[in-house]
Each structure stands twice: as structure tokens, then as C-alpha cells.
Length: 252
Ligand SMILES: NC(=O)c1ccc[n+]([C@@H]2O[C@H](COP(=O)([O-])OP(=O)(O)OC[C@H]3O[C@@H](n4cnc5c(N)ncnc54)[C@H](O)[C@@H]3O)[C@@H](O)[C@H]2O)c1
Image (cartoon, rainbow, N blue to C red; front, side):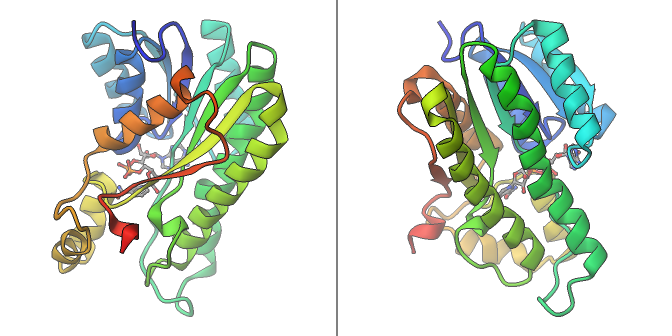
């Protein structure tokens, strides 16, 4: 019996990196998965991978910064599988690195629109659906950049501190009605996002590895394990928690 056997799980940003690993982990642990991404190819590929593993999944294209698109994606989940039990709100972008002064207003607005407003919109439309069933569990992807400052990432840090904050607020709002809300704070994880950052700033890779006490970058599957556990009944008294999975990065 899988950790989330028979549950319906929605994962955003599931066409790549951490979201793909999480969607596959949910399916492996017995859930039917709604794969949400703004990029069609990546999302469809994740569905193909899940089906090849013997799982059940459907792809929905959605830009999480659009209320109408998030509402429609959640409705598709309900129309397809009849229920929503688990959600991993994970879609995010890195944006260009800059100092606080040099950060461009348009970059700030775009990043906050996806990384922070997008997480709020997902919860806004997921929670009422979960309340019509037997409750639910949500994990928002924040970051260690939502716990400590990272030079060069003003908007990204703002978004991730915000994600950790709204996670706690939503946990309080719905604690008494059977909805648990947690966040996961990954350290540096080897995904296309980090590949792009390193390609733009080649000196960064060695510094990121050296800055991680375990001496390596994390794997997306290591974040997925935490997400699926947090969404499972094994975590039944865990809510409002910002869980660090970072190879001791923030223990320093
Ligand atoms: N990789 C890391 O080191 C790291 C560390 C901490 C937190 N995170 C966070 O983890 C999450 C996933 O990142 P990743 O490393 O897997 O990156 P990634 O770029 O590999 O995957 C991000 C996915 O989100 C999708 N996406 C982007 N904008 C979207 C939008 N508006 N609507 C819907 N989908 C959208 C992309 O198409 C992509 O499939 C992000 O929130 C990121 O900030 C990553």
C-alpha cells in the first residue's frame, strides 16, 4: 500500500525538476496525479513517464499567475477525478540575479506574480474543493532563500519568505477543518533552474557545492520524498511547518 494510495494529487510546475519528481513520487505511492505546468511539452512528458511506470495522470496547461487559469485547472482536476486530496504548489521561476537597487520593476512584478501570488491563487481555489471532500493536505514550495538572505536575489527571496508566511496563515485558517498546509524549503537542488543559473554565472556551481555541508547538490527526488510524506496521513499532526531539506545549508 502506497503512502498516498487512492488519493488525488495536483502538482504545479510538474513539467520539470522538483515538480516532475514529486508528480512521479505521488503516482508511485498510489495517487492519481493532475500534472500542471505552463509548458505543454514538459507537462505531457511527465504524464508519459507516470503512465510508463503504470500510474494514472492527466496534464493541464496553466499559468499559475492567472486566477482564471488556476480556477480552471482545479476544476479540471475535479471533473477528471471527482476529488482533490493533495496539492504540491511548486511552480516558480528564478528571475535574473541583481542587487536590490538594480532589480528591474518588471522582473520584480513577474517573479512575485508567479512565485508568491501563484501559490496563493492555488490555495484559494484548491481549499474550497478540499473542503467539499474529506479535507486535504497542501505543500507549497518555498526555499532556503525564504529563511535566510541570498545576495543577488531580492525578488526571489521576497517571494519565498512570502510563501513561508502564507503557508503558516493558511495552516491557521484551516487547521480546525481538516486541511493541513506546510511548505518545503529546498537547498540547492540539481534541476534545470540551477543549470540555468550556473550557465549564466559559471563560478556559482563550486560555491553552491562548497556552501552545502553535505558537499553536493540535492536531487529533486529528495524533495519529492518530503512532499509526499507531508501530504500523507503519516504527517497527520504536521501543519504550519516550513520543512528544510538542504543538506545542512541553513544549519551553519
Ligand atoms: N532547484 C533549486 O535549487 C531550488 C531550491 C529551492 C527552491 N526551488 C523552487 O522549487 C520550485 C521548482 O523549481 P525547479 O528547480 O524544479 O525549477 P524548474 O525550472 O526545473 O521547474 C519549474 C517548473 O515550473 C514551471 N513554471 C514556471 N512558471 C510557471 C507558471 N507561471 N505557471 C505554471 N508553471 C510554471 C516551469 O515550466 C517548470 O516546469 C520553484 O518554486 C523553485 O523556486 C528550487
